[in-house]
Length: 289
Length: 339
Image 1 (cartoon, rainbow over the protein chains, first blue to last red):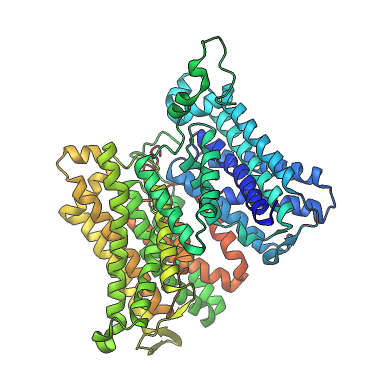
Image 2 (cartoon, rainbow over the protein chains, first blue to last red; image 1 turned 45 degrees about the horizontal axis):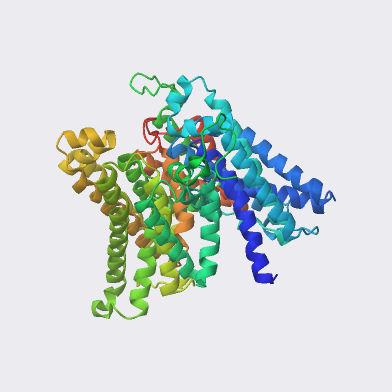
């Protein structure tokens, strides 16, 4: 496999896991514009645990993921007090605070960044990406996933149905933080270097766009959105700034023509093989697995 | 977060705007008393910077207050003004204006920002309105504005390069007041920024279009029922947004004598901070917030060093959004709708 192809695949896997981290809260109606903050926590956590504490990869990555999930859990309580534009701003501010902290403190190398000695190869990235994807599909088919979709559709009605909305939202935010942290940890070990400038607000914006353009109604959305926007520029072979112009135009057109995202629930329902099968009990199997 | 009733909430003394202003003035004056002229100079430059933030913050607060729309293109509109003006001069398109070329270029730059802003309106609000009957309930404009942010920024990068460029302004005279050095451009920009915002405040309060805007801000459907031509009034918001961001960009260019494709990034985020601090949807809040953020920035750089600014400003902001989401002057009802 050529270096170019494996590099693109590695980015695709990391972006996909990151996108699922943003998707899970988004599917419960919470827009997280601070994704880069969670990814940075995972990346710096793994970098520190691996290079300074000397932990092996199979410990440092899960530990970094847990740390990011824990911070997601803690931050979800204040953040979930806000809604609408305020929530967008609160999460955005969180991302900026994390980046600002990493730049300011000398504990993690400040603006110089950190070198990560332990390197992981592509197969592990692919394994993690597949695992996270399958886990998300499973999650969306559970009662929790149903509650998340329900909150996104109508929060008041969900409360009336007896769902503990706050608990569901906290869970979604925590899982999202853990996934974003995992993507950061994988990034750190694959690229062998982390610096705070990489985890800027533009990164948060991009990954949120992957998710919103892909669609938040089903777990297919982030998959399609991430693959589409990671591979499209590569396939078009357009370089430099033009690829971002094309990306921007695609976003504006998507929002005009199909604001629910590329993949909608109705579309998955139409394409599902179960449509042609005789109905027999249980709804446990998620679409298309 | 609470019941949402803002009608009968009594405020404790420390929640009133007057108290906050008094605290800030006392802090600043005691700072000057302790630090002398060095601190006074920081205060002056902080207020100058604050007047730029303030103008951009008003643009943000206007679109959120009226349309419930966090417009991420505003920093790029700010940048477009400076870069277009520089491009016009560098390519010799404004030679006809002679020694006033810089002013002609900046005016055209502001016009370009307004045109770009109307483009955003055309492809977000007008289109959505045609399709769904209402555009203020969706996250769609927000996402579209992120798309436009990418388009504008990278088109500028492609056509004008990524370098920081010098923008020469003919007047360099300084005024000396009580030992403080005030640049004429800074002084003019500060006065102009306050004049623009005061004019906007007058328009919103006392004119027909201002009344229409405030009605839409309350409820677009009701406004429509009451005979407000929503289709014709919404573009006005975008013209004002382009105008405010453009004027701020022009003032920044004149003040600092340089432009770059990234000049909007820092100012944009600080303006968002200023808006939240003042209270989303409140014009006077944006003004106070802008000046406060400008002051906080120069003073924290002076006292604590440059590395702490990002963390301190955004940390405070996060705390304000969570604990006092209405800011200093706003009302809790703004921007709380489902997105």
